[in-house]
Amino acid sequence: MNINTTTLLETAVKSHASDIFVVAGRPVSMRLNGVITKENEERLMPDDTRSIIEQIYQMAGNRNMYTLEETGDDDFSFAVSGLSRFRVSAYKQRGTLSAVIRIISFVLPDYREFGIPERIIDFADFSKGLVLVTGPAGSGKSTTLACIIDHINQTYDKHIITLEDPLEFLHRHNKSIVSQREISVDTESYVTALRASLRQSPDVILLGEMRDYETMQVAMTAAETGHLIFSTLHTIGAANTIDRIIDVFPPNQQRQIAVQLSMVLQAVVSQQLVPTLDGRMVPAFEIMTVTPAIRNMIRDNKIPQIDGLIYSSANAELVSMDASLLKLYQDNIISKDTALAYASNPEMLKRRL
Image (cartoon, rainbow, N blue to C red; front, side, top):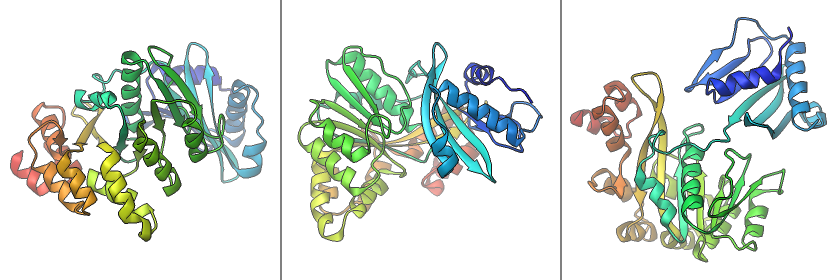
């Protein structure tokens, strides 16, 4: 089978696919609106997948395939002028070469189109502290953060440093200077890059992920010393997120970390993508803006009480996931069953629907 990889990439970009799957024994497939669909019915043979992957390596500046052949994994990104940027995760499975290609748009998303509330974009106005965007993989965390960073870039004269693995969106310098560093391409690791970035006169640092307690420790210290730090975690719910951060540290440090976190944390946004009535995916959010009462709860280890506070709140600073789902249902965007399936407290929500 003769597949032109450039045409394949063009098709994916035009159809607004998020990922392309190149796996032997199955036709080329794409993820559209969260659903994997086949491009055609022709199954790829091992030689076909090798041919497509070799073409991709050529497009990525004739990248050497040695890492993939030797270790069975290789991650990298490349751009096609005028089309898009692509992030590739190439790997071996059953002895054949395979790849998943993520499409990274040159055009930054408009937060209104994505249904991201104004309240979340306003977190760009904080002068310092830690803002966390949490949720499962593929829930749109990177998109939310890209919108916040874009707002800062258009509004303020600041130096923004992004540390990402890999780069998901490209920010052009606007009012701000934007330095985008890709882990293992421009720098060795998150913690090395984060330490180095503190010597680069940053105002805002976007940390792609807080993977270990060392990175968390440096991030909290950076937030404490007057920088605005944005990062992500794979947790759902503000209380879970706070617990997760504290639990990563050794027991003898947890008290001190809780006190530090109570001082630097500004907001936690949890999000998940839910299917709409017309077959799209929209985000539902839990928003916790840290109030003096919440700071006291974190410091005094009364974290379980935070969920109740958010759930019973009626103001825009504290919005529960279920309140967000209820609004999507009332606006005829999602079904009742969908609202209940994604609810954090289905029994309570059922009474309100």
